[in-house]
Length: 57
Image (cartoon, rainbow, N blue to C red):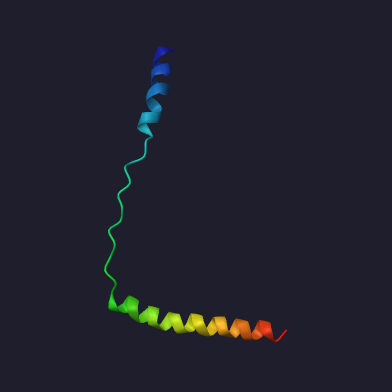
């Protein structure tokens, strides 16, 4: 019975999570800048299209 009690007392210590390591920020690549340049006008165009469709109501 004592060994069961000791096991139950030690068990949470075995299940502790590891320390969190913060990710290192990556430098922005040329490919990321290119896709951002493509996505920004596409988002703006889609917002304008939605506004035009909603306003026709």
